[in-house]
Image (cartoon, rainbow, N blue to C red; front, side):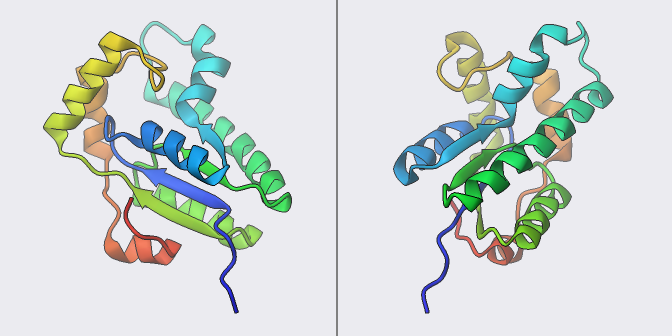
Length: 168
């Protein structure tokens, strides 16, 4: 018996690790639809963003975007179209919720962990802020970067195996 094709690729990593670049490459390689939380947030809420971003303001909108992304993912899965989800997946709880949703929907999923050291990640963020290339959606300040660092939980080997995946 062959295993089902992966229909959901979950890309996790801290700020500046290269998640969006990896997600773009994976989507191109697999013919997948790519969903990026930064793009959704920028397009849907960027014009309404307060001068000082508060976590409660942001996370409420992230949750709305992710709920809509799940509708898209379920529709794509019914059509046999793979999806690459680029939503940061900063915490184990966040990744577990997505894995549980995939299991409940019968969608084969894989977790990809993009990992780079903190100094290199900050260097990349500074470069992205300056160059405003393909993965740029908004400027990431050092304060934002450091805040996410306090929340980041790298996936364990057991967690990656629970998704049925190997490291990216």
